[in-house]
Length: 323
Image (tube, rainbow, N blue to C red; front, side):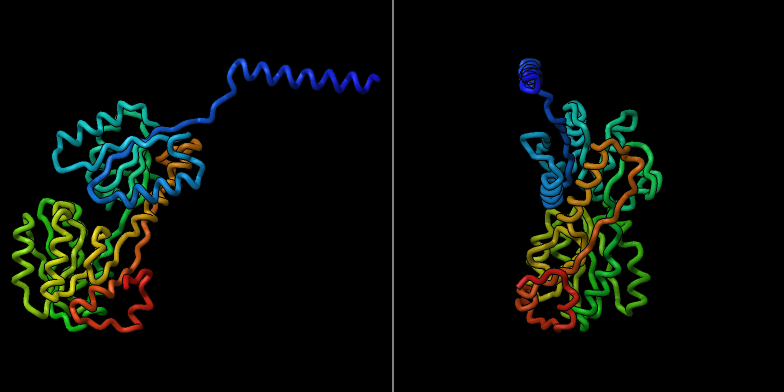
């Protein structure tokens, strides 16, 4: 009898506790807000980021919200206004996609505790985004891209061994472009190839230069944000002229003969893991900057269109083949 009374008493306590919790409101799971500032054509990074965040338990619309109002352009004042807007949205963290927004956001958060994760950025130490790679310091960390140009140039000559010169267009105002190509002249000498580094200021100059290339030339499209808008058109023209055109630019996908560049989806996933650690309480400045992975893509449709045969031993090295 005593045992039954004790059970009834314990049950009453449990029920009372549940009722009190219901009346006072059960504790809600922590929710997060991430503000996103992105260069054009980096949606693939954001897609990879969101997918990994979902895997890590951050479900959009439930416990995480992304504030993203579209790509940033070249207007400095408009970009500053957008970053100021994101800063005012009580975000827990800012995600910057690309070099330009990362530099702008770094400047905007200097006197704040706002965590920032970039994915990707080039030469973060040289560009004064972080103090060093292993211990960034301050409130920013992320995923860096290292220049894939030297390796891409090597792949170009393996895929197109008959090429006698390689044409590389770049915009002189793009710091990322200038930094990414500065090692190429020495690489070209080692490979025994003539390199044409050509400053072009707009789409028309770029297309005119491609039309003037000799038949034994090849093209390597590198990182140059100011020329991104004309990239697809330039690749299409190269195919029409049967000029082999490779890329070390991760935005070039459709008409390129090959691409050796950053895996943008994986870059987004790498960034998500860093954000998860920050939300767990680790300071951004204590998280080492990671390096984005690169992969080789070969487009057999383009090879066929320009009547180029790619040997099987080359194809075996590709992580992705477009057939």
